[in-house]
Every structure is written in C-alpha cells, then in structure tokens.
Amino acid sequence: MKVILRKNDSATSLLLFIFNNYWSYFNKDTIKLSSLLQIMMAFGKGESATRMALSRTVKAGILKNIHDASEVNYCLDTSGREAIKAWNEEMQQFWKRYSLRNKQWDEKWYLVNLEFGGMYKENRQTVLDKLRQNGFGILSTNTWISPYYQSNEIQTILTELNMNTKVVEMHGDMTIYEDITAFIDKVFHLKELKKPYANFISNFSKKFEETEKLYQEDWFVEGGHSLALLHGLGWEFLSIAIDDAALPKALYPVWDGDTAAQLMFEFRRILFEATIKYLEKFD
Image 1 (cartoon, rainbow, N blue to C red):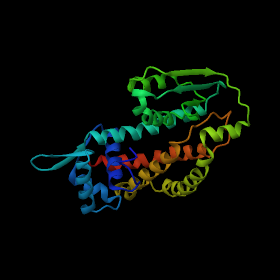
Image 2 (cartoon, rainbow, N blue to C red):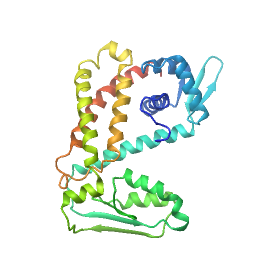
Image 3 (cartoon, rainbow, N blue to C red):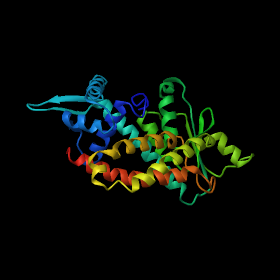
Image 4 (cartoon, helix red, strand yellow):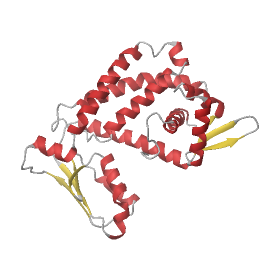
C-alpha cells in the first residue's frame, strides 16, 4: 500500500480514492473515462495528467481499461483491489482499537512471542506489519504486547502465513518495574505522535468550521469541492493513527488522539455526504 500511494496528492492516490468510494457505496468497480476526467478536475488534475496517470496505473496492474462500442471504461485490477483493501483494513483496525480504548480495561496484558527461524524468515516483515496494524508494541526482539486480548487476530495471521510452530501466547497480569508512563512511551512510542496529531487538529479544525457552513450548498456539492478535502482528511489522519495503539484510558487518560479521532469522525460525516451526492451523477 505504501509503495503505491507514495504521496497524498499523487494521481494514483486520487484515482484509488475515487474507486474506493465508488466501490464501497455503489458496489461498482467500473467508471467511464469521461467521468474520471471530470471527477479528477475536482482535484485540479487536467485531462493530460489524468490520462498519463491512468496509463501508469494500467501498466502497474492497479486499473485496467475496457473498450465497448461507445466508451472507454476503467475498472479495478488486482493490485488496485489489494491497495484499497489494505487501506480500508488499516482504517478499520484503528477504529476497532479506538472502540476498545473507550471501554473498561480488565488490566490484563496479552503477550505473543514469535520465532522466525528457517522457513519463516521470509514472513517476518509481513507479520510485523500486521502486528503494528493491530496496535502491538515491541517488548523485545521477538516479543510483542497489547493491553487487549487478541488471540483470534494472532491465529488469523498465523493461519494466513501457514505458521503454526514456535509461537507462545500469554494473557494475564504483568508487573512492570519502572514508571508506567516511561514504559508505555518506550514500547508504544506515543510521544512521537503528539506533534502530528496537534498539527492535524489545528489544520482540520479550521477547515471543519468553514466546511460545516457550506457542505449542503448546491455549488459546493455539484462542484465536487468535498473530494479533495475528504481525501486529504483521510490521508493525513491515517498516516498518524496507523501507529496509534489507542491504549485504554486507564493507562493513557489524556490523549490528543481522542480529539483527532472525533474531528475525523465528524468531518468525514459531512464530507462523505457531499461526496456521494457528487458521485451519484456518474453512477
């Protein structure tokens, strides 16, 4: 996913954003070329730039073009589906963690130790990515912890990769012989997210106040003005939240991530409404 979407304003990123919303809401993965050219104009991308981007995505296996008697259509190809799936899973995993943060914590820790010797070495990075996606912190080289019981999630990962040996799981009380705040920062690196979250809140709070007054106006909807805002909002939020373990409030009661998540939720709600109204005319 990160390889494909190198920049938040790249044409590839924008095209996948369009297809993701179109696919998720209308359950369709095919869009006319004429429609794509018009939609991309809402992002400030002209016809030449869009056609070049479409050509690159076809070569990369992200999209494929289909010709009929009167129109050229583009639909998601294998890499495009995988990229959208990865993006959506990352966002869903954050909201899952965030919902747990707002529930009462049982004060127990879940620990998993995985050995990657022999035939499992090639799976190491994939497993690390999935553990991060599920909010695990690194306790030591092969040991990860989470304040949430995640045995089912671990079993799913191991089954997908056909790893069924050299795995140790534990769930229960854990004694920490150091300051809990220092321990949390060392394992989950939350301090590194404070500045990005603060910047996100400052930037998008102003935009939310402005947009809340405009998002139902005909000119705002029909001009597709919500698209660039929604794309930027999701991109900037996930680039931070992807590394947020969303620890229980009992462990980390005051957290800028709470303000950012609420802003993301409310801003996305009004932008998504306007975006779908805009995209409906291309359905």
